[in-house]
Image (cartoon, rainbow, N blue to C red):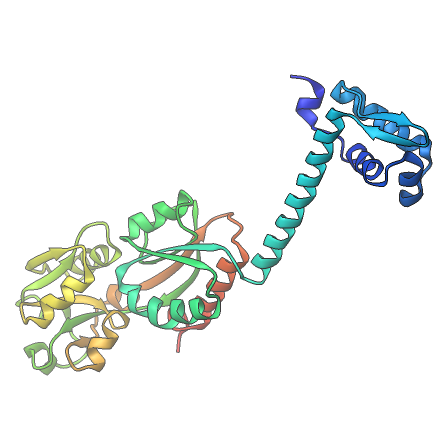
Length: 308
């Protein structure tokens, strides 16, 4: 590989050559650039030596570009055009006129993300493309670590040194049941032993919710009888609405159903459930785009991570 192939064309020489080609003479280019004509002549000679071709032919007081020179002139024009486009795109990014953000989150965040954050954010910045994907806590962390997503939201995610928690929010786990269930008549907060006699719907392994239930069972020395195991929070809600059993979710995950009188969220005495946290995460060391940073700010100040 030649030195030219390694280092590329000299920026200064290209600039001088471009000015000469545009003005039509070395003297005219020298006057415009406020340098000596000999400086420009020397730089063009060095450019010709680098390329191994003649670029300019003298004709009276002016110059005539060779066929090789026309190729270099086109290159200079395309380069200026490309740089102008880059500057425009950067300007648009700064104004959030373009860009992409990929969010991966646990399903329990869907209502809050869509209602309080993505709806407002997308309306404010309609030219940004936002991808929202749902996954279990293990996959949320994996996708962040592998740069498959910019921002992650998960309930009790596994620890990974490649992923950094930006913010946490207390999000106690509750017993989710329907109005009129016998558990709603018991003294609040509930002891988890009160739930043991009833069928329970649980999240599949790998989800933060599933891990929390296992820890809660261990801490209270109990074991729930599961009649449903699923990877869908929506399915758990339907399971409870059908009066088939109870489940464990955060009050945020069922806020709409509670407001509509379809479900009831009951707090417990269990320390594991009461200390549960949701995590807002990014890859450690990753510099986020302006758009992603703006969304992080919105996540912090709106419903998802704003503690009221």
